[in-house]
Length: 250
Image (cartoon, rainbow, N blue to C red; front, side, top):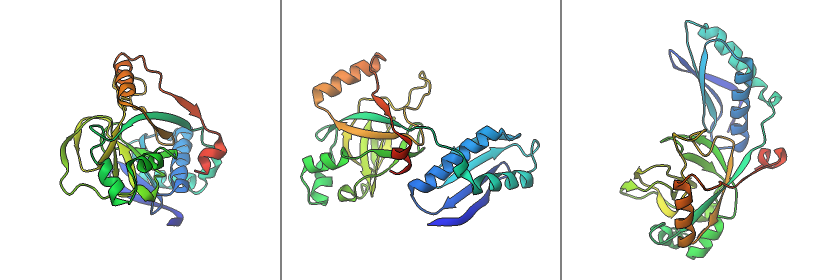
């Protein structure tokens, strides 16, 4: 659902939420990203950070540098006409992924749950670009939109204590990639050798809000070769630019 006008909610004594709707919607997310650009261009005194989410933008500020009421007025004005900010061209980043077996122990479950073969699940999972709505949970974790409902699957009843970095999973109608070893309850269908978060890289996160990514199926041998190259910082991540029409109408 899209709100008739932006809603501003207090997030604390130093933050304000600007909400555009209630749901996961590419158009809402575009408005979030446009507002973020507008705030950056305006260089509002006292604003220290902006954090985009699916349908809202969290704005941090210093109340001693700007009156909260004045800031709310500025944010509302910018949020009402975010279309004035043209989004930059989005990157389409290729994510090589080894599916099934030790890399995707839940691939068979996802296939059986949906009445598909494992190869059909892989075909559907690799068959579409995914919009990165936001980064969160742990540094570098991309929240993606665009997965086919035909491969949706429930979370594990009991989460795993440790999921390896690069694991590609499905939870409900969403898919995502774990950037670091961590607990988790998503159904694992594959694994990428790419490093999603690297403090020694600039930027540290491989993806950003507004990017798109596409999964490509690789063999075990290719996984090992790419992983070795990634560790040596010798793997050229494959990316192309999408036209404005492509990324504004996902």
